Length: 317
Image (cartoon, rainbow, N blue to C red; front, side, top):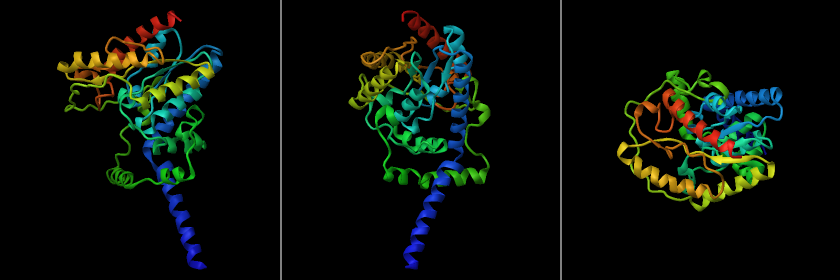
């Protein structure tokens, strides 16, 4: 009987160690958990200081986190704003559910999901290791798959799979430990009401060429429709704004025309806040360390264009 008992204890110990590596030791999880905590504190402060005043939330992947400045939105619209952008690896359902649970009746969520998630199938699985790790830190594992918003709860098998760090993560963690570099972003990169910024630049960044997607994929449509139904039930308003992609100048007109068709498809589900650029922008000076993360100047430009369009939208409601 000793051998089976030892094997069971070894298995439990292995999974416990895996969970520690995935949740506690992971510097990426620690960074995003800190960003979430600061944003939630900002929401609580707004609720306390201005009870009943609607908040505008921005929900999307890191392209949202690194491109929308709540301060500019607030100065233009007169309404408090919070940037809730999370890593796209946390999964679209998790990103949207995370935003909806922050919102109250009368608030507005501007969905800023990258269009690739909506126009191509299976872009991000749900649940994901990132969403699982963030919810594990909160002690609320059932929300890592989208929770009540999408009616999905992880299975025991999911939990066991998600708690394993994987070879890729272990190699990355070892490399960071050896070099002492840690995660690429630091707590000091977390700015006013959730905006993230970085001084890193990629001098070899290249703009994308022609994009041929012109409509939502059925899975993307179902995602937005399900979210819209959950938001309506809670009394939360929705709108959509498309992130900027670093685009070859020669492809700007083509991509904007096609993305306008995608936006028209999205508009059948929720209002669209069109900033005049339809998700395509050139000029490497507008971008930071990726073709979706904006520089300070790019963030200011996109935020002001979005704020102006958002103000007009709010004034008609």
